[in-house]
Length: 619
Image (cartoon, rainbow, N blue to C red; front, side, top):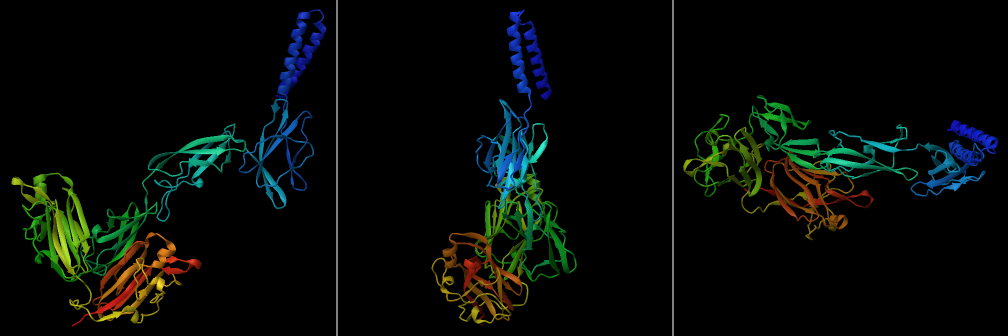
């Protein structure tokens, strides 16, 4: 540009000389040559370069100033913009002035001008501390931006950032500034993005950046929102036989309680998991199994025993009241050719809904059996798949287990149901049939080998069936070993959220850890523990409305979990409970997270046990 300007100035001079020489002889050429000289001169001026100003920190560090311009005809212009302001008012710089800078950081933009021609506009970030200006750095000129999403995979302990419902963060993006030459010049910060939460499926996220001159650059990033992934699982055996499984048996999902935690923080019960290995060894001992779901596994040890306790075939018991369920069908064969000698099924000719009920008297610990599709149903119906067949198992009118739906390829499915302390067991067959000739209902989904297992462990006396007049308040016993559980509390904790008062309570201790426990030696003397779980009035007054699945009270007999109270809300009504303690030597009560945090971090009782009483058997 400099060479072009000089050439045009020379050409303008030549044209002027020619005009002087020939102008008098050719008047018409005079005006043409003058106009050409003026135009050439103007173009030459435009073609002259304008130098870039130089910013300098003043000696006293109170501000900045600019060096003298390279050419005398140039004027320096500047503007100072404090961060987060839109002030871009330009001022002319007076030679020798110091521009005071006090805000950290401040953006200073500056340029030189000659008539309509300007130099490059330079943006500089000036940093200030208590001693004044300490440094500055030039901000590259951005023409446009590009962005990529930094995808983070979910791990066993860490959620990812691509699941539906995830709230985006600035650190999830890498935004690069591109200059006029197409070069990547700067990693961009302080950009905005919209929307801020991922939805399931395709998401178009718009990234927006406003530079120091107020120019806005945008780009878009495409992100696919997946269903939240599983990141961890926890598993435990449902069996009430002190964690034992019979030698040579086969492990099936219905024997386990498996909870999965997902990326979005939610916990869900899982039933479609794998068990490795599924076959139980033929020898007694301890075997290690893994519960596997979506590549996440949880290992656990299971005790294998030859004898799980005394058993009774359910069909050998007399039903309680009238029933429409078949308990005397001949041997049946399932769709895989396996034979069963004892069967529970719908009854021919009694419609699609059949039920049977048995009086157990709380004498059994678990109920096992095998759900299977009959071979006859496949022979008559052929290939089928239906969500209609349903078998429901109830204990004292509380739903304990449901088997819903089946198809002709379903393998036999073993199940185990905890029926400890259950007095009445009811089994309902709902639509578990197919129709043969003449409209007769025939068994389609049935229960094979239905078996009741007695409570294992030491022989125990039967519960006293009359009025139990011999009782002991648990707080009158001396705890076995050290404990940090409170056995007395001020009145605000002995009143529940419905205004009922209790004479004595068991609760967490506000000065100890989040998990407190107490143990008592009973020596097999007692048959039952009764009491009332309740939410304290003080917790509602201090916390307000709440809902949490964290508080948990667990009751153990000889290290076997007998009862769990998990979760509560501010509106929960007091809940009475009874726990079978027959044959129990050591009773342990654990309070896990049953507190709320008060001033100074003290833990105060939230979920407690009111009026805990031990009952003795009366001969």
